[in-house]
Length: 398
Ligand SMILES: [Zn+2]
Image 1 (cartoon, rainbow, N blue to C red):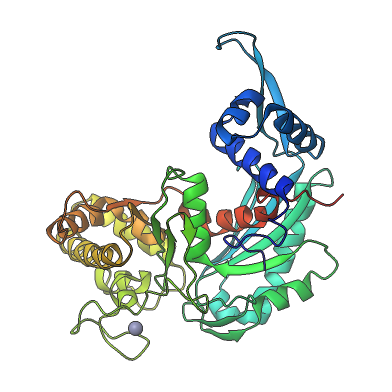
Image 2 (spheres, protein in one colour; image 1 turned 120 degrees about the horizontal axis):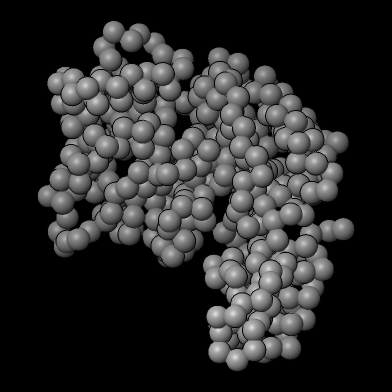
């Protein structure tokens, strides 16, 4: 699989390291000049010029006009070039598939959503649908761009081989997802990886959300099963087997509602989208398409419906409790909530913030905010992860 936190094998190659440093600087500070890059990376100007020439030749950087706004001679400015290579990310949601293709500059080349019931369809049909969506996306991306890789986001446990031992939100167990998708796309020559939705969503937050400078960040996914993507000290935490952040069965309320795992009051049984719908829309029955129900809750909350408002305040308090647990473990600067938790944030966060403040020993403590990336977060992170080898300083083949 493509690693998004482990160094590539030839990092010992100084040129690879330096290339990555140049790309990283331009990504964060574009537009910037060669002299800026040299000043901030500590590389000498001749080295920077040579690296930049190589990166321009390979379509990873491009020049963009001159700036007048400098002391001395106007300089030619550099930006990332997103026109030649893209990463592809797919997200398997409980009721939809999302595809995102993004260039090196982070600009989404395409964002598609397709209603698809992965839970009832099962892994085999889902793999076929993923392969079909990938082929359509690659056709749309066109022959003038090269797809560098595909990363699939799935809510559940993912091991380092891209197998999914368990994805309770989809009802999947023991699915060799990466191998199956690779087999279905065997006529394509880009690498395929699988990672958790939470890991990829937190990567997307850090790259495309307003948290680029944040080294300690958590993304708490919404949806049927809650998971956490954890960035600590600038690195994604994976744990010993790759299962770090599987917080869905963290016990929050001993007398809480029954959870699918057989216990009571787990995080997912209190904050998962099915639990929230069951609690706020008691007549809704079993739900296969969550979005319209979440929209109904928004409408009722806006209209000031008393039971819904009270319920959201109680759920918000639980979210504050869960956040304080994460805060105690990892001391993040920001916890970002996604999915239905972001959609309902205007009513959840005030109570969550109050609960969190009451549990914070040393103010101001962790910030708790709603994601602005929507249901594409995992897929966008997948597209970002697929570009990781290039960002690590390796030149694309061909
Ligand atoms: Zn549970």
